[in-house]
Image (cartoon, rainbow, N blue to C red; front, side, top):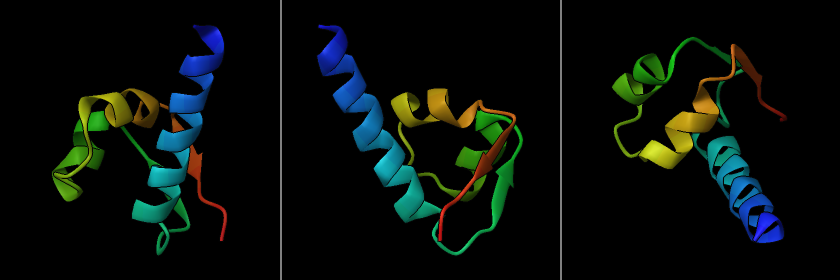
Amino acid sequence: MEKRRMQLINKNLNDIYFYFNNFDVVCGSASEVSRYFPLITAQRQELALLPCFNVMK
């Protein structure tokens, strides 16, 4: 089960890299992120709660 959860998290991180590909850093709450990206699901918003999200180019 834990391995499955990690796979889901990794998939979501890849999705976030895709969404934020043109941004250097994303900082702020999930609500701020979802305001700009309405396609982000609740599961992705959970990850977006990280204080700052450095996106790899």
